Structures are given as C-alpha cells and as structure tokens.
Length: 164
Figure 1 (cartoon, rainbow, N blue to C red):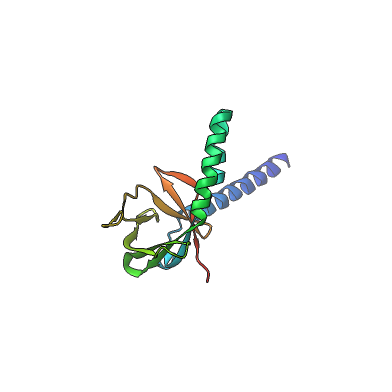
Figure 2 (cartoon, one colour):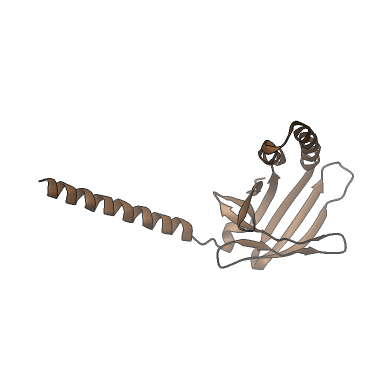
C-alpha cells in the first residue's frame, strides 16, 4: 500500500515536472515576428527610480547632488517625446519632439532587424545632425520592449505601444 502510494506520488511529481519543463521551454522559445513589432512605440525612461536604486550605497552629500540632478534630468525628459515607428522590411522612423512649441521635430530613418534570439536590433544613428552608437538591443517583455546592454536589462528604459 505504501509502495503504491509512493509510486503514484512519484508519477504525479514526474508529470508536474514534465509539464513545468514543457511550459518553460515553450515560454522561453517563443519567437516574435515582424508583425509583433510594427507600429508606433513611445520611449519611457523612469530616471528617478533608476537613480534611487543606484544611489542606495552613496553618502548623504552624494545623494543630495544626484537627486537634484535627477530632478533636472527628469524635467528635461518630460519635455521630450521620443517615438519609434517600426515599418515592414526593417525600416524605422525615430521622431524626437521637444514639446516647447518652438523646436521642430527631428526625424531620422533607421534600420532594424530581429536576430536569431528574437532580440530587436536597431542600427546606429549616423547623420549630419547626430551620431549615436547603439550598443544594446530590445527584447519583448509583456507587450513592451525592454532595453538590454551586455545581456543586462537597463531597468526603467522601455518602449510601450503608442495608442492614439
């Protein structure tokens, strides 16, 4: 009787382990397609939370300086609207709009692609106005794109789908 109960528990444990393993493989192996990316995405940066996290180990004076700078940076970020508009065949329009009513929108056309790990790679920006080397990649996480650099997520930097 005990042997039968132990055998049934072992079989149930094996089935649960198998189901969890299959689910994990399925969840992590899902490939994203071009159509999952197409459309407008708004850049969101939560600089205050990131700085709060990074400044936990700092002294009082350092914290005061960093927090005052973060408030200034946060107010600048709030005045800039950055939109990524992904198109078919690896085209992307980057739109930077300074919300002051005077500055014209800056528009750059870029290329993007999906690598073999379903990471979204955006080519470097090289124009007469700006040059930016893009050393990271974007990864779909819960219907958002999160930014990664050196295989580590840069927390609080993400793209969210733009809804009119």
